Length: 199
Length: 199
Image 1 (cartoon, rainbow over the protein chains, first blue to last red):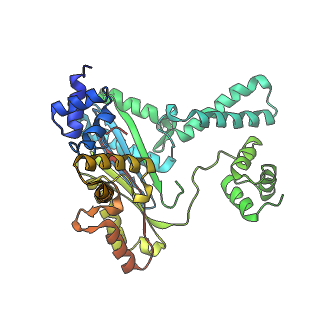
Image 2: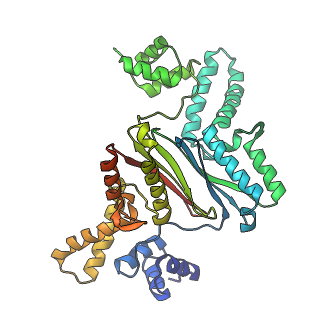
Image 3: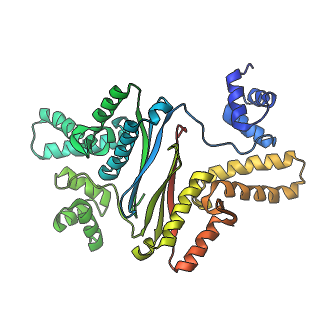
């Protein structure tokens, strides 16, 4: 079968093997690059695969450690150019986000990331709650949705009020920066460690 | 059914509800504290549960950000007393570990954490490799185990050579510190972000 040149190149970059070896391995595995990598390793041609692929992104990885070292946050924010990554306002934003995560303990970057099971569990509880308060059946859905917004505002970073100015929601803070800088900016991920918490 | 006082106390701490409400909820859910928490929320008695439980641990959360902000590490190291957490040698060790993770990119703290599927996949490759090199069948197992040690030394933090002194393995660095300080010390967890890597 024909193997795309891109796939061969990619395998070559990952494994450091020659083009012909990569092409052959991809042919033998019908184009499956994971299996082709294993095959090259089995033949002793490739070393253990580098785990980490790369996506095209600029930006900044930064941390915030709270006084006393009992709480720390690691955050990655992406932008499109290295020029913006070195912009002082961009860097200040990244620092603010790290501090925000430390103070407000979000569980997700955006509400898209909340697993469906968590949402339905939350909804069920809020529904029973609203019914138990004697709310009329037709009002329950509206009440539940309203309270679900509160849940998002507590658990999703982008929906949280900014700790330095609670009138501003993080997604608006971000939108303002994007408008000002003229380049897309994405809060990619964060990790928050509190000393001694169960993971 | 009888409910242990400890379970009631724990539920009370998690929910902020009264002892009697907690006891009743636990009785109704046959002692299942997760379900009891949901029940208290459905009754409107408890707010959304705090996600984070706590284990008894002292220590330090620290970060290392490599120059330029393209690479960052967050690490938690536990000890038994706050006194040791403030010890300069302990803190220097935590900083060294963060830098080690940045430089050497381990995937796990210890080899116990490597999933069984990863090990068997690795073994299969190493076996085919050794056989392909024409090694005698009875030597293959020994060769595979030897090469598996190399895999651990690359992927497990505790098995890695220390970047500041490659003759020392991290677990020995740790053991020396434990002996010197006279208190158990555990590298609990780490996270490493490389800008733009696929997660």
